[in-house]
Amino acid sequence: MSSFGVLPTGFSQKSIEDILTDIKARQVAAFGSSINTGGESVLGQNNAAFAASVSEAWEVLAGVYRSFYPDSASGEALDGVGAITGATRSPATKSVMVVTCSGTPGTTLLTGRVVSVPGSLGRFVSTADGTVNIGGVVDIQFESEEYGPVPAIAGTLNIETPVSGWSAAANALDADLGVDLESDEEFRVSREARLRSQGAATVDAIRAELLEVDNVLQAYVVDNPLDFTDGDGRTAHSVESIVQGGTDADITSVLFASVCAGIRTYGHTGQKVSAVLYDTQGAPHTVEFTRPAEIDIWAAVEVDVVATEYPVDGDDQIKQALVALGDTLLVGDDVIYERFQAEIFTITGVFDVPVFTLDIVFPPVGVINIPIDIREISTWDTSRISVVSTAV
Figure 1 (spheres, helix red, strand yellow):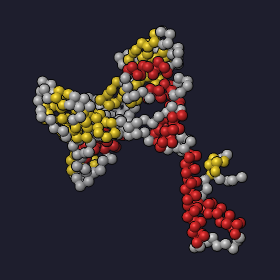
Figure 2: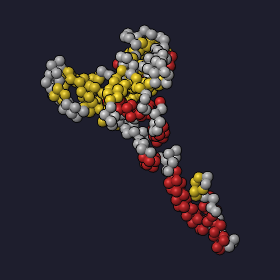
Figure 3: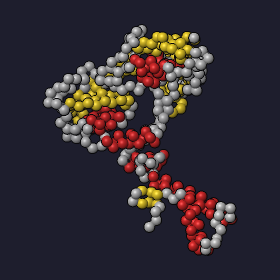
Figure 4: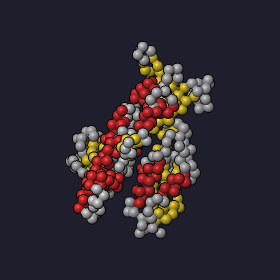
């Protein structure tokens, strides 16, 4: 029995050394032990060339074998494995932002107008027509020309497709960053999550289903299995889903299909979204969930920097670093002061941070952690961060 190929223990690939040994053994058996198969001989050199070609074939066989398993498949093969269980790779999306266009009242800006971010290669294209109002402005949504995260921090934009009567463009808030095509590693993780979402309506399964909804950014699901209202106000035998992003209709539809019969869906007072959906028998069911309260975070930074090392756009880099860290926080995650202060030092040339304040009001004065309730989420934008750098 061969010790190579598909074995009970898996796939055993024949190495080029194994192939050469096999070829030489067959030649000796056929022509006698006196045959010269040394590396310097003509036959030996032919053997090496032939073994290299056979080795490539073994590599292909190993790749085919590994392509049947999610932990080792990659690229299109991994897509195929995922499709078996109904999982698909999340596509790349474009970054989007609202641009305030200023100009002469009555000026029409057709879809396809282009603006760019000063100091970068980021270009954004308008996705709808707009007409400058009597106040001299109009807000229009723009999306990046390229897929993936294209940064555009709040500020003035360059107009790349001039139109008579259009004088200026600016984004009051940072662009909502798009995402790259889901990588193999990310797809393996999300595929596992999707598999867990199938079957019983567990908390993890409900959350996984919610995260599959278009444009849902975060979902936190908690249940109350008790026979009475719990300390957070959830009624007996209920499930509360705290969801950021996505449409109300899509979310309530998923909850209606995911939460098992006999269990109530709960929405917190003042943050509740409620809808009445009907089952196949025409019976009405009230479906509720909670929208997290968005807590705007303000920050003020004063840094001492080494002038020869600090980047020209160092102030903006500090803003972006703080926002990037803030965007990793989940529903209910506190804002830890020292964690954000430390992030400032990741920018080249920062020598000291004599002033750093964080707060939920303007101007920010806090120098302590900011507690975030389970039904809240901190929100970050460079327009709410000021940075003053001083060379030392």
